[in-house]
Image (cartoon, rainbow, N blue to C red; front, side, top):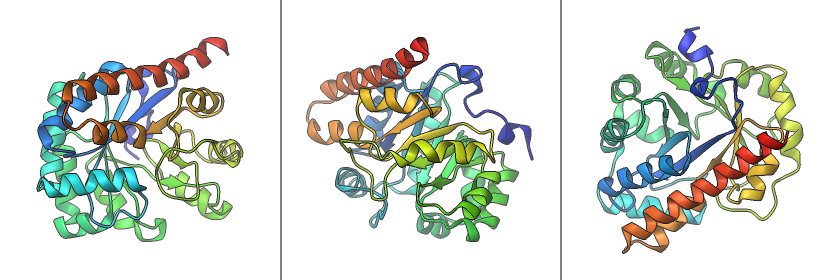
Length: 275
C-alpha cells in the first residue's frame, strides 16, 4: 500500500493531538463562485478538511437540507466535471495542508468513467473520495483505480454494520474511516446515537486510521461529546442550512459559516485541553 494512503490523512495536525473538523459543502450551491467563498470562510473558522458533495438528483443518503442544496446546484447547471474543476480552484485558494475530499454517488462516476474520474481527482488535487452508495463487495475496481492515483478511498460504516463486514471494510480503508452516527439520512439530530461510542473501538481493533463521525452532528456540545472518543466530526447540514437560509446575503453567509465552524472547532479543542 502506498505510504500516502497508509499514513495519517490529517498528519499536518500531528498525532491527532487536535480533533478534526471536516466541513461538508454541496458544490455549486447556489453557484460555483460562491462555493469558493464558503470554503474560504469555513477554513478561516477552523475547518481542517473540506468535503465537496456532488449534487445529485436522487441523493438517497441526504436529508431535506442537502437535497434542497443539490436541487439549487443542479438548477445552476453543476455536474461532476464542474465540481472536479471547482476542487482545483478551491485548492489554489486554501492553505495547502487542508485536504479536499469529494463525496458523490456511484451513478455520476460510472457516467463519467471510473478511470477518468480517478485520474481527474488526483490531477485536481483531491486527496480522498467517498462513494456513498457503492457497496464494499462491488468496490474492488474503483478502489484499485484510486489507489493507483494515490487518492484515498474513504468508507462509510454504521453502528448496524455487521462485525465480519466491518472488519473487511476498515481493513481496506485508506485516509480515514467515516462513521455514520444514525440509521437514516443526513440532517441535524438532538441526540447522538449512543451506539456510536461502542462502534469506535470496534473499528480501532482493525484499523489505525483516524475515525470521524458524521450525519446528525451540528452542535458544539455534540462535538465535545464525540471528541472524547472519536478523532473528529463531519458537519454538513448545519452549514448548508445557513447557505439556504441567507442566499441573498453572501456576506452574512460567510460570516455565519466562519462563526459556526469556529464554535465547533472550539468545542473540539476545549475537550483536548481538558483531557
